[in-house]
Length: 268
Image (tube, rainbow, N blue to C red; front, side, top):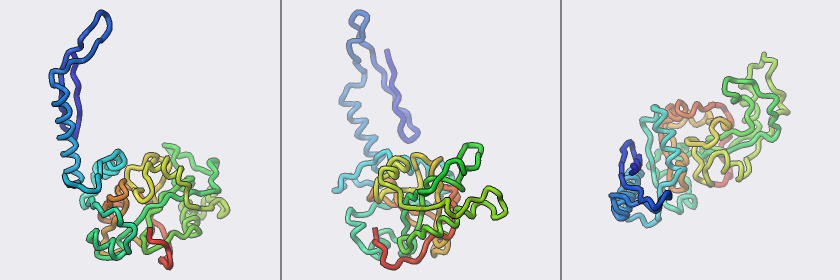
């Protein structure tokens, strides 16, 4: 005999059956719950998960819950500090709209609340410059950083290099030379491998290689009013919103001055 347990949303579903033997080999499994019952159970689980994510039963965009979204939500919920979190679905043409139109869809008071996450790579990275921490992770000398910046701003690579360098005391003998930094937008394949998210779905939550990617938050974001921001949620049509202070606490973000006001930056 056998027993199968399926866990979903802290609820365990159990099925029992009998191994049908043919000589010394297993012939097939004949579960007490027939195949149709299992199919119906899977359909009910899908309905429950869709309800959890606010996906309507008649969703014309054929959205489905995937592993990227689950990683985001798991990170947020396990942090025990994100009490204001919102999950907002946006239309497929969201990125073709103006910032004002996007803000209206999300219920934001200002376009300055709209943020994006971008993976940056230090092309001058040298592992030998890293300080040996307890977990071998050095935020002052990482090859990659995930930068969270407003759509109303743009990343200033020189400011980013200066701020990361300044994480080590000016009096410290380990402070790196300015030439040890050269930040560029990371390659798409590096973004996919490290974050686990595709373009326009990158989230600071649920990063696959979180121990290799420190989170950096633009200092301008903490000045936003109200102090609530929106960002990627792991799916191109899903945005996550939360209070700024909760974001900083749950991601252990480095808050520094790394952006300039947007001039003619693309509204991706």
